[in-house]
Image 1 (cartoon, rainbow, N blue to C red):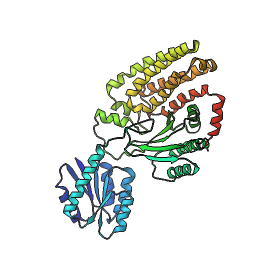
Image 2 (cartoon, rainbow, N blue to C red):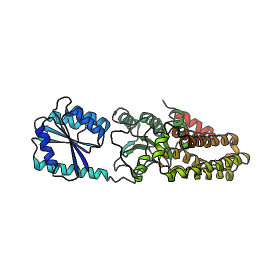
Image 3 (cartoon, rainbow, N blue to C red):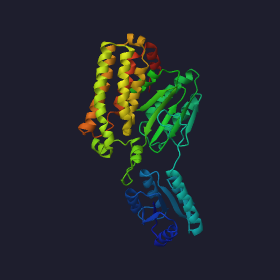
Image 4 (cartoon, rainbow, N blue to C red):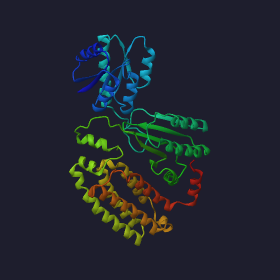
Length: 427
C-alpha cells in the first residue's frame, strides 16, 4: 500500500487530486492544508509520494519541501504550480521536488504522470546493485560512480575542491579522508604514478577508493591514518585504499515489524547509539546461543598466546591465528558487528603473513602482549554487551579495536618505512 500525501490549502484542488488518485489501486490518500501540517504527517507516516502546492499560508511549498528533505531523502515530491509561475517551479526543483504538474490539472496527463511515478517507486524498491564495485568493503553499490582521474597537481586540486566545497556531502569525517588521499596523491605524483579516486554508494554508506597506491607500504599508510585520524574506517590491500562512511540516518519512518531478512540488512550498516538491551531484544535467540562459543574460544586464544610467547615460531603463531578465525566466524554471524570483524580480519591477515625470520627480529613479549590486549578488549566487549547489557552504544569498541589491531603491525616496521611515513605527514 503506497501512501500519498496531497498538500494544498484549496479544498477544490484537494478534492480534484483525491478523486483522480482513486483510479489507482493500493493507494492510501492523506491530505494537509498547509506546510506545517504536511511536515507533521511526514514525520509520523511512511509517505511515498507527495503532491505539494507552492502557494500556501502558514508555510509555503518551497519551505515545506526544504524541511521535509532535511529528514527524508527518499520520498518523491511533485510540485503543483500555476502555468506562469516558472520561478517558483524552478525553485521547488532546486530544493528537492522531482517533477512538477501544472494547474489547472489535466486528468489524462495527471493519470499518465502518476503511472510513471508509481513505476519509478517500484524500480527503486527493487534496485539492482553493481557487483563490479571497486571498493574493498561492499560490492552492493548503486550502478553509478564518480571517478576522478588524477595525473597532475591540477587534477588533484580539482578533486580536493569538489569534495571539500560541496556542502551536500552528508557524511562525517569525509574531510579527513580527503586529506589522506591528497597527501598520498602528492607522493604518488612525485613518482609519476597516476591514480583514480572512485566514489561509490548505496542507501546506507559511501565508499571512497584510491587506486595504484602500491608504491607506498600498506603498513605506512595504516600507521599514518591511525596516527592522525584513528576513527576513520579504512582498508588497504591489492594497491587500493578504501574508506567507508555511514550516511546520516533519519528516524522519520514508523517502526514496524521486521522480517529476519530486513533485520539483517539494517544491521549491515548501523546508527550510533544502539544500546545493548535494544540490540538483544531484536537478535534471534539462535545467535545469542553462539556467544557461549566466544567465551570458550577466548580461553583457547589465551592459551595459544601463552604458548607462542614461551615458544615463538610460525607454528605457535598460526595456532593463535586459527583461534582468532574461529572467534571471528561467530562475530560474522552477528551481522551488526561488521566493523568489529574488519579489525579482527586485519589482525588475522597480518599474523598469517609473519615469517620465522621476522620473528627473530621482533620483541616477542611486546607482540604477545599487544595481541593479548586485543583479546582482553574483545572479552570485555562480550561481557559488557551480552552479559551485563549495560553498553549505551554497542559499537563503542569498533574504532579502538581496529586501531589496536592495525597498530600491532608497527612492531615490525623498519627504518625505510619510517622515512616514507615522514613523507606522508598530514597537515
